[in-house]
Length: 488
Image (cartoon, rainbow, N blue to C red):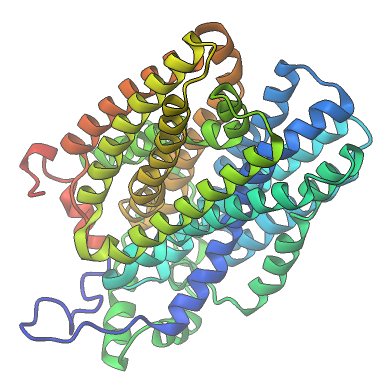
């Protein structure tokens, strides 16, 4: 598929590593910016939900439905995004994602009642589902092998930046009257959505999608812009053409993803089955870790840890956001140097120990009315460590890994399946986290999550081969052998 990608630079002793292509970087940056919409929602809802509950008087169950509805409905956006992007292209799918979220944000900001608020989150959720699937796929198809890890981890960086902006919004607007502050908090999410809609106009289409549609002239011009030399561009173009010619007997100019679902889910080859298990598995464990729920309900978690002042609660979440952003950036910068597996395994192991620490701190606080300072400090440090290890490992690597391992024919719809699992688990956790914690205590929830991340570490070690520096075609070959036979 891309076996000659950057071939003039790879495996040559003393060869200088090519600088990051500015055109590819700009396009990846614009595409990944759609992820800021989810991040902002996660961050801002952690504070807005406190004021919404006080203003319109809703129950804990209604809070969970309101928070989780966006994640559950993003499942449908993710499922639709694969087929949609094969039909209308990656670029227009990004536009569809941003415009759908814009409609939802406006509806949330002006919602006169709880049902309208839920309706706004349902619409915004569909847009989020589209954006989470299309951003990494588009970036993967545009990126050279030497910088694919960095560029494809940008969606997680934007999610984290969005969370930080959401936290800052909570902190800044918390002093306004309750009937106004939460509306501004959720409504201003329409601003970045509008900017993304305009930015799409300057983005190129995915050259691989253009080749699948038989639009070779347009594809070649874009490949020339994202390559370092004309020779490299020609090599990449020819390899993509060869890969596209293998789309069964289907005329490439009429390619619309027909039959892909059947091959992917009902009659997959052994290698495709291993790819699907790896992609679904990493997305499942990303959300089963409880990360989104911890971020959504961080004020409640800290309140249970003995911190009751709202200003202090929101101030701590800002520190959390800064910590997450820093470690996502570290991961993005070193992902192509150290590889996916080392950072992934480091991150999951760190999450296990952080969750155990958080569970112990929560247990002591729940059992002691005096609320010892050391337990409060332990809980705060454990939460920040948990989010930091998530941000250096499974957070960014999930988007990178699940979009790069599928063959070209299956990439859009395969990634769609994996991201749909991601959103389903995220919604389930968000809609049950508080209820379960109220029944069995926060401490036991965190111990359970630690057990889940222990299983995740074992799953990743056994079933996920290293993909650092591999072209997309070489990655496909990694899964043709049994996982135990793959050199890690």
